[in-house]
Structure formats: C-alpha cells, structure tokens
Length: 246
Ligand code: ATP
Image 1 (cartoon, rainbow, N blue to C red):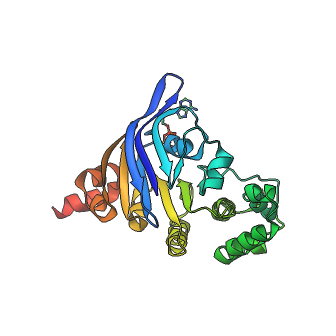
Image 2 (image 1 turned 90 degrees about the vertical axis):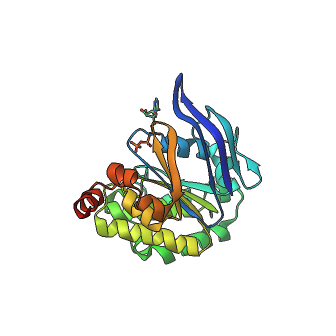
Image 3 (image 1 turned 30 degrees about the vertical axis):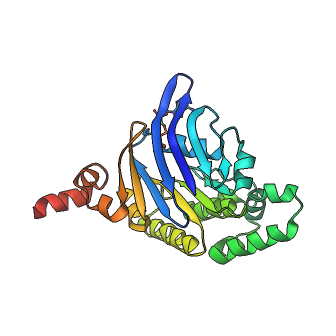
C-alpha cells in the first residue's frame, strides 16, 4: 500500500533521513521506533507533503507522492495525527473535527462530513459530550482522541500517528493502542511512530528501528520485543528483568 525506497530527507544541507526503504501492506499496523532525533517525524512529514525537500520514492497505492502538497496527500487517502496533537485550543471540539474534513467541504459533500462525524463519535463518545466545549479545555487524553478524530474525518485509508502516547498515563496509552486495533478491524492501515516502544510493539504487526536517520533493524513485532538490542535500547525495564533471569 505504501512503498518507500531510498528516501533521503533534507533540512538545508543536513540529511535527517539517510536513504531508508520500508513498506506498509494493507491493514497492517507498522511501528517506527527510535531515540529522539532519529528521523521518525521527518519521515512522517515527508509522507504527508509537509517536507518537500526529499529524494527517493514514496508511493501510496497508485500515487507517486513526489511533489504532492498536504491537501493532495489527504485526498489520496493519508491523514496524519501530528506530534503534540496540534489541535486549535480556542475552537470547539466540533469545529476542530469539521476542519479535519476540509477537503470534503470543498467538494460540498456535507452528508459525508456528517457521516464521518458520526463515526468519530461512535469511536470516541466523550467527544460528542464535549462537542461545543473549547478544545483547549479537554484533558490530554481527550485532546489525543480529538487529534485522531480530526484525522479520521477525512476518511483516510492510511493513518499516520506521530507519538500518540506522549504525555499520557499508562491507562490512556492502553486505550489509544486499543483504538488503533479497532481502527484496523474497520479496515484502516496504520503507521505508528512511538517512543513508547513496548506499547507500540504490543499492537503492531511489524516494526522498524531508526537510528540517526537510518533503519538499523526491522522485523515482526514479537521478534523485536524479544530482541536483546531492542530490549537494551528501548525496553529498559524488561532488559533488566531479562538480565536478572539470565
Ligand atoms: P523525536 O522523537 O524527538 O520527535 P524524531 O525521531 O522524530 O525525534 P526528527 O524530529 O525527525 O526526529 O529529527 C531528525 C533530525 O532532523 C534531528 O537531528 C533534528 O534536529 C533535525 N531536524 C528536525 N526538524 C528540523 C528543522 N525544522 N530544521 C533543521 N533540522 C531539523
């Protein structure tokens, strides 16, 4: 569904992503894990059309994403839930959601917007309750639900999530990861960037490990969870337990 070949991303002269190749098949949950600054968000920005300076190939279904701007990428079927959520705090929950459907608004498909909104409220009933409340007054977990809901409003086939667990209590992280499984059951394909490697690998089918702009390891999520290097670098506590036992 998504095929990336020899992708290099640049900020001026600096190469932040150094020739990566990865693929995502339909209905997979794929996670990218790696330390701060390893290039995960840069990759998400390149796929979303937010970072124009890249070389290599990004293909989504029959589309070549080279040169596509963010609205065109959304229309092609990819939505991003950005790092830090980036909701609009003074605007109501409802208006934040409507903004997520702006590509449909332009084509005047109002019924589709209402149908998308109903599906989001089905998934996150709390957002319906808080519909007219300013988004900035929601709790952190509710804001993350709103950010996911907003991305879903455009009816994507591929959902990109950049660190959805950031700043959330463990119970909420579990809830968000559960939502990703539900979305996959509904037919979505998911590419998930996470610092919380344990949570991400527990729902993912496969994963890629990033280090300073390169992929250093890839494989089935279960294999990565039991990989000694992954344990040492990204699953600290587990590794200590592993060490004690051995
Ligand atoms: P984090 O988990 O902290 O978000 P990340 O893996 O997503 O990290 P990126 O944000 O993609 O990493 O950053 C990759 C590299 O690119 C880093 O060295 C970072 O300093 C650099 N970088 C990111 N954004 C810019 C920018 N706008 N201008 C210049 N350099 C940037």
